[in-house]
Image 1: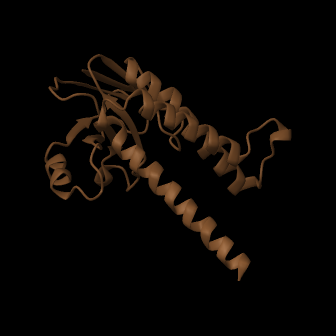
Image 2: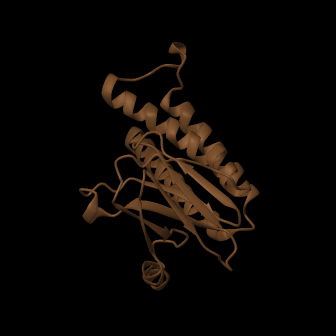
Length: 193
């Protein structure tokens, strides 16, 4: 496995941290072990390069910026560790980077990252300018979120054989569904009373 990350123009001379993100929040022992396995990588000439071998099946990881050297900013990009050459490219620090170079990462980028970035762009636009409409040629927030969920579900289905790739995302997906159900039930109860 080889990871190449380019366009780190504002991180030159600073460290990024590569860490396993395949554990669920209540898996404390696993989380502590993972923190021991974090890898600090120096960004040089606007890029970093990491090469290693893993005996694990594919799993989700995240890179984020070392807080002590990057003024507290913690933006992150997630991707899947799997055999092959993985490329990561950041074009906008508000969004996750594009990942490519390996089959699972290509699908992850298409089904999850691109759609999540669209939701985030629309949300930022709404916050700054007000609601967008589909008539203006742009997705509404609801349509973009629905498209994002469809992409996630397709990714979950395709890669169910790799639980350390999908389990955290699937857990979050189910939590959001449960929160939405509770919100609707509360609104129905308030309406009926």
